[in-house]
Amino acid sequence: MGNPKAFMTIPRKEAGYRPVSERIYDFGEVEQTLHREDRKLQASRCMDCGIPFCQWGCPLGNKMPEWQDLIYKGNWKKAIEILHETNNFPDFTGRICPAPCEKSCVLSLHEAPVTIRENEAAVTEVAFNEGLIKAQAPAHRTGRKVAVIGSGPAGMAAAQQLNRKGHHVTVFEKSRSVGGLLRYGIPNFKLAKNVIDRRLTQLIEEGIVFQTQTEIGKDIPGSRLLADYDAVCIAIGAGHPRNIDPPGRDLKGIYFAMDFLSQENELLMEEELTFSEKISARNKHVLVIGGGDTGSDCVGTSIRQRALQVTQIEIMPKPPVGKNPATPWPYYPHILKTSSSHEEGCERRWALNTVSFNGENGQVREAVVEEVRWEKDENGRMKMVPTGPTEVMKADLVLLALGFVHPVHAGLLDELGVAYDARGNVAVDTAGQTSVPKIFATGDASTGASLVVRAIASGRKVAEHIHQKLLV
Image 1 (cartoon, rainbow, N blue to C red):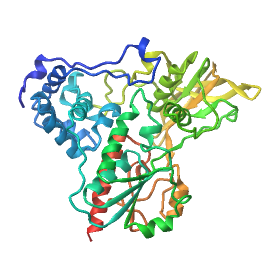
Image 2: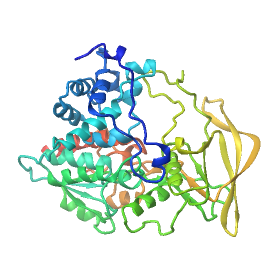
Image 3: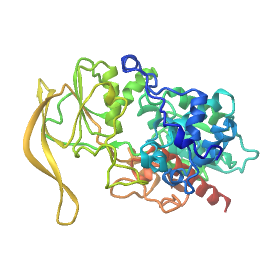
Image 4: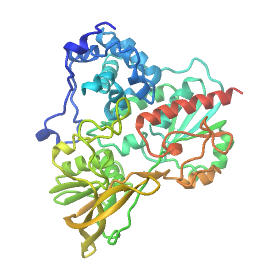
């Protein structure tokens, strides 16, 4: 390491966010950037710790110590090359990854880990600005054809890896634009869509064909796909939302979070709306049910739509602040997370279960919630126990951010004759191969909803297995 003692003299410095008074009036990215010299100093804090737990914690196995040191030395070109060895899209993960690498950093023991995620975004921006990221078309073509169904992070990663092996790759996407959850699910204030567009340009220049507004089973029969391609990779994600069904669920004004978030992104892109009914938080009391990242995104979007009040409730108890003995270092800690959206003005409540919804003229106006506690049953499993007190909360707009349960297109799996489990996830072996020999599955379609970084890792892994299969 160039400066093995920097971690003792240079404090952790984050780029921070744009002022709340400014950012809530637009959908521009909220996170700021540090200039190069500050970024080099932050990279120098990566210590020669012997065992890089950061690399162990990263689903992609990114070589953090190597490219941190290169940033410190000002060798941005070599840094992005090493980063790209393991991660196709560090500009995505550098913005939206929860950074398990930082949680596993040795300096996290002192609550001051290296700013790995921000450094990752920074080195990618420098590389794009200086023309260091160029299309890498294969030197020769194998003549083999691969179809990738779905253009989210897993699908794009698999497509790029397979294309660079020389195979002809076509990506089929049912939506108008490429990107999947990155495009339609994540708000612009976390991931600007031009970041996806510039990667898409690169992938097209490398020779990948993208066919949008094309649904397999509807626009192209599954039998034709199997006949025309040597291998098929299913990367359709896990977009079916988890639901609840208390009395009053059928009232107007109660929507799934992804319908709300996708519609806002479609409006910003000036696309035709997929969900025909306009969903607006303007001048409303918004209740977000679900305490995860999707719920947080609903909070930020509602605030930008000029909601009167935003409340987010979670059925689980409030996590501890700072450290949690139940999830010690170097494991990912289950602790209280406060997002940029929460800082913009939101009431947060925990251990509340939704009992019912009340309405007026068919429109939701209130939610009735009750306090709960969690305890272990005789088998050691956690169970929810109502504690009695109930409360009525104002709610003109209710957004259900309860996670996802299985691939949104189970019909597609039937069309292709692919087996799936009781949860709706595609059944695969360790190589990602399905019950149909030439069909593979990757990302959330096979694992259930997870992180973008895991989707990219899965896409890369299954691409290698497909490549080996095609060589036989």
